[in-house]
Length: 559
Image (cartoon, rainbow, N blue to C red; front, side, top):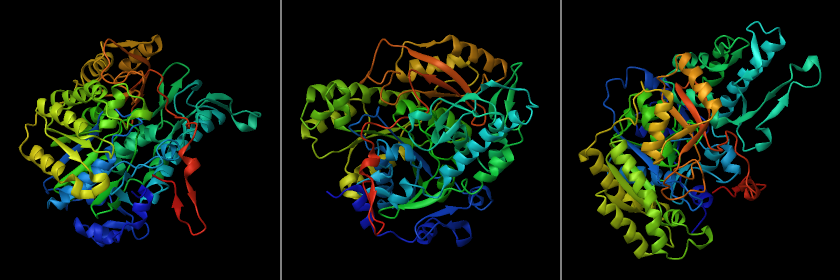
């Protein structure tokens, strides 16, 4: 089979004007970024034209706990959207933008795969429309304004030892996690400890993705707590008078990006916070606009259902007033065997014993979605060429015993044709399934209590332990009035626990919360667990080593 990039480069892409017209958008609604990309004016979402139009069905795609073996969440999302369109359901897709960090680090791309991709794939995986640059620039403008304020006399009495705001870069670069800057004498600023996060972990990204309009965004940015004064009072971006300029940098970025799948399904690709260190959902504007323009909106949450889906429910749905009509849980035989203890090198061999053991992970996610979130569910088994009939039947049997609809998904190799069965079952679940949608915890519970509920109910932990630093900050945040905010857990994506080595469905463990901070502009509390990092590093053999371009401009190595 051809590589992802070869398939994408050979695709017959329609002019983006045609894609826009297919969902009722007019010439005045879009800004062109070449022939195949456009931004949709945010006024389409905010004006009265769509105000009274009934929302379409919202389908949330999530997955089992991810592994290096691959699950295929984005591929399934794209293929499902294509298949729903093939069934005559007017469908749009809403996805996150890829970050350059993983693209050049471990993933090589994040635009789907095979015959279920969003295109132009190269553009989407690289600079796209410049949104991430704008978010990084806004983040770093605030950082520059903080240090300039201190240099110019520090009228706000900011304690340089208690600055919480970090710089950011959209690249995996462990060298920048902790730095000392302002060296070289008085003219170069005030020396202090500093550090970088990856752009997708920036609070600006979170606020951006949860904003409803420019006014809302500017108000959110003003609430960012950048640090504390010498007497312990919080200092905000609003105090520094920086929020207006930050919003200016983000003005164009806030308009959602419109592209298409290989089969011509309209797709919004907009915003991209990681789900292991942020809330893991594409922009609220993109999702809500898609719901107005289509009968079905298929969207995905980052990483496994314990991370992305939980945050989609407890953060995005809460703030955006959303209610999913159904969920899709993506699994693969390969990933389940790895959860059952099989070495990555041996995943091509049939191993029913390991598969059965790994099935515990699938069952936990099924329980979370159907019981903790109360959503109708369809399991999508992403078929790989090496999967045997016995292995596939075992997964199907487990789902049937759990009384959960299940479908083999072959969208990677067959496009929409390989997703018809899945699409039919999703339609049935969305239109006739029992929907008892609910949040995991009440907002009025204390910060510690909410963390413990997530740990116990969603991860299956015995509870949570808190470091002295975390305990102190929780008390401080509750004193400052942030008790009633939802929780954004920063946790490894590779395990239900905070230990990436504990695969399957771990038992007899506790989550260790080592740090707690408020993302006031995003409207949530971040709890950092285990050894999770907000700036990943590159692997021993980065994907960048395989990415290249020839003299004609043809790119290779993205996948």
